[in-house]
Image (tube, rainbow, N blue to C red; front, side, top):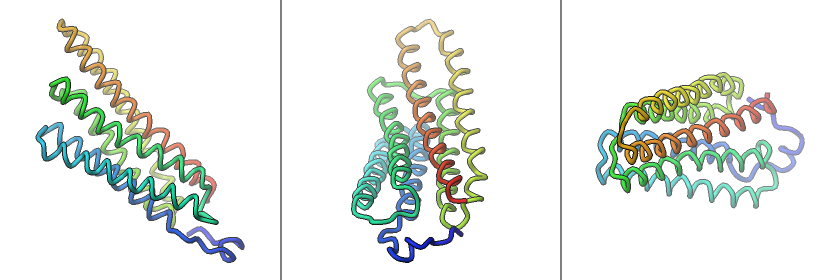
Length: 207
């Protein structure tokens, strides 16, 4: 467990940023899982659940930003806390945007989308676990970073394979619709990559 320094004893942390970050990571992982559920069953219940989780995750982020302004001390660099929170928010916001896009385009999922989202889900779940370990065992949290990055790589591989397959279709409107969805999921994976890079920087500074 990280040791409190002199300033931590003199000015004890006013807010538990570890808990807030972990809660946002939990909402993010739940949002991606709900998105995958919506792909399997694109009904109004799953759509509502994803929209609700996106709002809840955003509420956690906004509260954390307010606490960052108010806090005299933070458990680690406040810029890292802010950047981590913003990057997480972009992941779940992307999932919601992709769902809304698929509804407007009136398209269902395919193998590539399922594979990409499954790997995105696994990555966000591992990220949630890693963030939960930051306070008690940052070294163990750091060991999970490679697994999360592999999930991002798997999304990229599914993206390339799916792009190859979809371009064999002669319906160019369908191709363009699916291609845009693929790109959006790839962007979400990119946000996950940015988020885990920030986590890695935090871990390196803590141990």
